[in-house]
Length: 332
Ligand SMILES: Nc1ncnc2c1ncn2[C@@H]1O[C@H](COP(=O)(O)OP(=O)(O)OP(=O)(O)O)[C@@H](O)[C@H]1O
Image 1 (cartoon, rainbow, N blue to C red):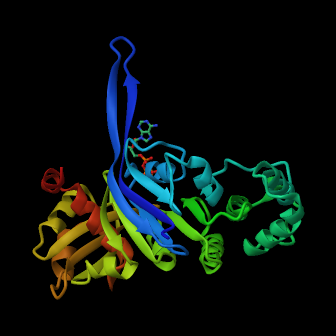
Image 2: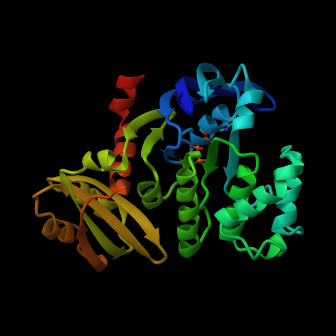
């Protein structure tokens, strides 16, 4: 039996706006999403802000009813049998909500174990097991207010697992977590699937998805634009070379000049403090460096590096492709 089956899921939000002349606005957040997740699989849902990831997760974990389409968790329909679904799932979201700061980690877990109806006999052992799994054994009597973000996040995961769920939804677990703590967190997530828990993960960190996920779906504008193993997605840009160029203050005109160079397939910019990193994707075998540097005439340039395409490059290509106007018309 499959862990998760989403079939043509759709969700439209209707909100009332305007006070003087109220009118209804409809947002089609999810526009027909279909995918399956096997038991024990670590499945990633990737996409830009507003793509529909949270809405999809909320339909799967029974917090929102689908406008149309169906979804099942271990065979239980989310709309018709939400109680059975809830028994089999855990939900962990990034950020600060959901823990009692003035209690110790142990007391937090005891409290939630009561709330989730974890039977009293097994509680102590379950809590000890989970503290061990998330690497908090020895720190469990400290108040949560003194915990780092990474430790909190690991405690959140322990909380989400108290009732032995078969599926864990992890929404942006590493948001705001420093790189070392994020690495520990990834190890914890990887251990979950080793213990046969199915994980549905959303993240904005492509390196994290690449390292952890068996398969990923890229969602943009409420639709799945690509689905497969991280390697199969990377293969989509396998015919490209990538240049990372550190620059200081490159304007839109410089980017436009680079975009017009023959062989250039895409340019993206990441702000890094005072510097920006330009990532230029080109057809393999073109020699883009000289014309790109010429296009950046007058801009201060730092480090330049050529590298193999990563999952992030594939992701950017997929999302940019989805944003092309003609493409939207074709799929509409
Ligand atoms: N309660 C709501 N009422 C109206 N519109 C909503 C509501 N919740 C979300 N939306 C809209 O639905 C779309 C999808 O939102 P959703 O939160 O699912 O995206 P997301 O992929 O999770 O984004 P993010 O990465 O920013 O969390 C967005 O356009 C958003 O503005």
